[in-house]
Image 1 (cartoon, rainbow, N blue to C red):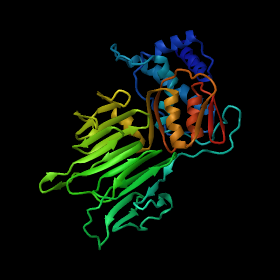
Image 2: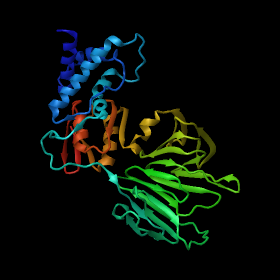
Image 3: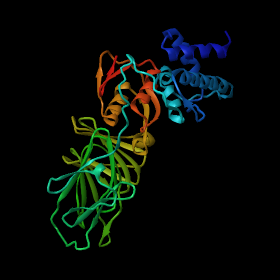
Length: 386
């Protein structure tokens, strides 16, 4: 069998889930010598599983054709090549492939399409009254004392002072909470921009003082773009509290992820921040491209370089997985699609790489994972992995 036909044959067996361990090794040995980059897929539509399979095979052929253009030096891989092969479909899907006709899952028990999350949140005012923000029309004014709260033309929440606002030194707070399957963006009273991911909440004053600005990320994940403010020629500090961690903002853009119990990941995109704890006066300074990881179990704070694009992809409407396990991916799906995850068997140790648009219906995203051999079924809003 000719070389190209042989690897197409192995690719086909991989897609069908019938490849043997020995064949995996042979395919992995070839794949490890191919330039590691996304495979271009022309903008087209895959109407069914067979067409998706054909497009994948076509892209395997493209990699075979590119083999002759490789340089001898190869960069080291941090994971096994086979896990990259198992995840290649995610990369292919991320380029421009859209599946319009969903294949049925496992036992053909699909009842309805589970749509992705959307902008929605609950705003709790200082008197504890609550407003469902997705039910408020653009331009409608809500008052909390002399503070005006309303949506702008983009649907983002904004704060401003009413024309009759008086100096008020009493600090009162609002809390914004996104449900599972929701996200929201708001502009704080000082002009700072905050985007909340699904299942997140933040508490903040509706009026900042002239000497300090402080907010508390109660749970979940948020991306911050802090507006620089000065008073009497001095910078007004901005602090973000998350559990026992505190971030002192020295410059603009950063992400805080506090989904995991006992772990807080703070990633700096632009500017400077100091990260510390309430129980320790020492702080660590972060520079762009670095992430601080706080472990509450031992009160330990460490800093390491990070791929920023992966961390903040959610705010730009993408899932971005890099050597991610299946439980990691499904945990994100669970929050975004508001579904329950149940495992009926031990999870195979895949590590996935690639991107999927967050506006993708759940069934389409699962079709991509199914191509690697993972099996699911859906019962109401429960996803069962077996």
